[in-house]
Length: 144
Image 1: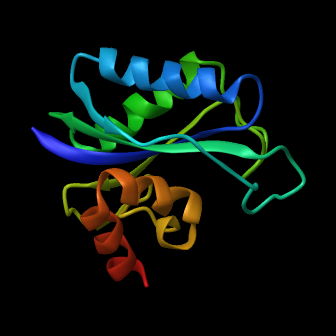
Image 2: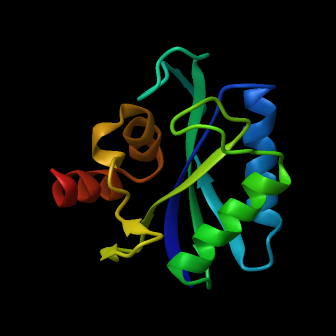
C-alpha cells in the first residue's frame, strides 16, 4: 500500500457536508482507505477571488492505486458529486487534489507530483501540516 495526501475544498452549496461526503466516498472506495483528516478551515478564494470563501481540509489515504489511477478515482468522485468545471479556479461543489504520493516526483501531462502549486497555497499547507508536517515540509523544499 502507498500513502498519499489529498487537499479538498468547496465553496458553493453546503461545503462542510460536501467535504464530509467526499471523505466518505474516498473511504468507501475498494482501493482507498482514509487514515487521517485535518480539521476544516475557511479561506479566501485563491486565483479567482470574486467568489465565496472556501472550506478546505487535507486527508491522508492508503491505496494500492498508482498515482494516475488515484487521480482518476478523485475526479470520478468529484463528477459523481456534481462538479462541473466551468472556469479555472472558479466556484466548486467539491475539489479533490492529489498533493503528494509517497515521495514520488513526476511531471506528466495529466499529473505533476508533488502538486505544482501546493507550496504557494496556505489553504493546502495548513491542513496538511496538521496531519503530516513532514510531507508539507517535503513539498515546500521540492517546489521552492
